[in-house]
Image (cartoon, rainbow, N blue to C red; front, side, top):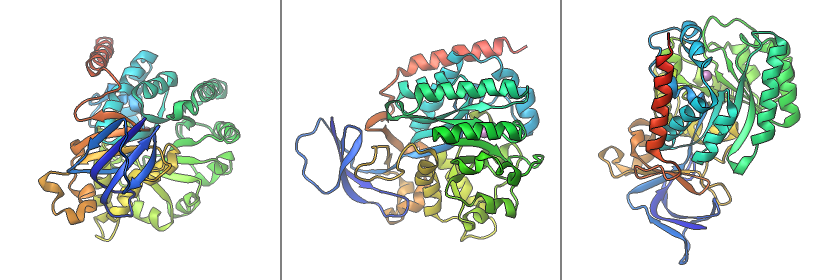
Amino acid sequence: MKILLENALVLKDAFSQPKRAKVLIENGKISKLDDFVEEVVDERYDLSGKLIIPGLINAHTHAAMTLMRGIAEDMYLHDWLFKRIFPIEDRLNPEDVYYGTMLSQMEMARKGIVGYVDMYFHCDAVARAALDFGMKALVTRGLTDVNGLEAGKLKLQQNIDYFQRWHGKEGLILVGFGPHAPYSCSTAYIDHIAKTAYELGATVTIHLYESKQENYSLKELLKTKLSECKVIFAHCVHINKQDMKLLSSENFFVAHNPTSNLKLANGIAPIQRMLKENIRVCLGTDGAASNNTLDIWHEMRLATLLQKKDNPINMKVEEALAMATINGAKASGLTTGTIEIGGDADLVVLDIEKPWYLPQQYLKSHLVHSVNSLDVFATMVKGRWVYFDNNFPTIKESQIRSKFEGVIKKLIDTKN
Ligand code: NI
């Protein structure tokens, strides 16, 4: 299968400049780039007036939480989680999670996201939804041992089973491990999870220092096997200088979720200081119940503006674009985060024939500061369009919507 994209501008990575180039895709991978002659192809797209960029990565989310979008507003993290979210999550079955995840993927694909890092439960349903949609996902089971270490170990066994069933499936799915947070996992449990992840070569993701009430020691945590794992630490809002130094490792990434952090009154993560410590930062939306949109463009701009509040030289356009693309790609292991020969064809096509993309000499600035996520014209994952010009070619949109609404009706009807 050969697909040719022509007449578009192409931004190959966050640090280069857009230029006119053709892109040839063969069997899901980019096989030719720039200027070449290719007469016989299966599909040919004239993308005049469009810009192609690497696909965006959502490095921290709980995809199925679209089911709870708008359900718990104006609350602090603790009450939001324990009084509103957990009681609903207790009632979710695998089919509910499947349709919540599907709706989430529709939104993400519509906004140029090609892959996401998920932490949830009923992970067979999450992986199945990603596979059915054709989107990339690093699937992790949220793990806690608040009901005792043995109960925690049962959840860990589920995570291991998910790994065995899904890891590497069709080049779309990776499975990692998701200890929820140091306040909901004992150190012994985290060590146990980390040893398992390390043996399997799997990535770990964990919430860290999300709210200022969280009281534990990262130094103690890193005395466990976690220190040797590849880890995505989500949030890191309330992190001190010493702890920041501990995160400056090539195995570690911080997933910054600026909207969710503000909405739950958790504050602003010190991203500029992290960058100075050479910490690798990527971007996440968190779940739709605390954001409420799954829009990495929005996170890019907000992240940039929050860091600029004290000094305009903080967070340059390239840094923001790198966080949304290559850093998220490296953290998740899902893709290259670049447009390059040999890489998976995971890309976004933007319609730049809009007033807010002029003057075109400064397109990269526009991608952070004046973009509208709905300008995404198409999103391709591994050489397959998952969103194209107001359509989702891999699914039946009306069916997903009505199933999703059925789940919502059930959840609300049984609320009391
Ligand atoms: Ni989260």
